[in-house]
Image (tube, rainbow, N blue to C red; front, top):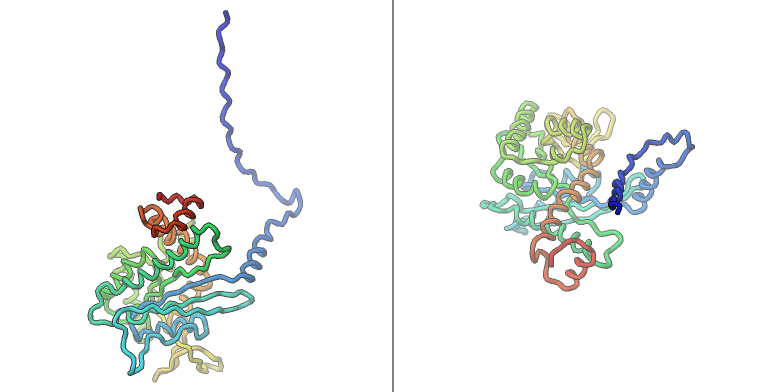
Length: 341
């Protein structure tokens, strides 16, 4: 009687490595047109960008945002008439605009925070701001888990928070440190030194170094965070920004003056015109290029992929995290979001 010989087991299939094909041998395919397709789609639909400004009254927050976008996108929300009372707590005021340039539409929302840091007792005054930021994540999450969700979910999440530091020349206030320590985990914070023309060049340089050192000592990371650098090119570029530019020492103005036969944005002083876009006078141009021309898309991606995902994961993993709404629970089950009900 012959012994049964077990059949050899088939070897598991090994996925083939992608092979680079020289398209010149096969002729033109058209892969490179994807960039133009994306550009056309963006031009048609436009995109959202939401920027928050935080700081004490009188630091020129509204003026700086108007200067950034070269239009009246932020009202003087932080200045009060005699008849009006200063808010006892932080108020959140969001103002929406549509800005178009070169056929591309940007749906811009400026979120102002009048009342922040203006009270005698500023304990926990960042809490309304943190609550507002999380509420926008919650709105987006609820839209995502709907069964019949919208083709394009309205994005009200805060992509960037400009935190205005008073130009004291000394050190950061405990309030500054506490705010950035709490909020840097939920939003992209970019620190700026306001009204930099009130300091000499030496004072400005020393103050910038002191602020960077205090943030480092207190373990506060501002945007762009080191751990989010994707490659060597990003790291090199962002290291230079972190070590040389941050925090940006800026001057804002929406008034024009004649200087050497040219119309420039600036502030008139007894000793001359402070030109907003002149790098010898302040770092406004560096801030504008950073926020709008080089890092705007990355600000949006870090908001979605890091801050929002952190919030989303926590909410979907917490028992009873979302309200016990039957429709919402059913949509979570059907959408396969992994929420334990």
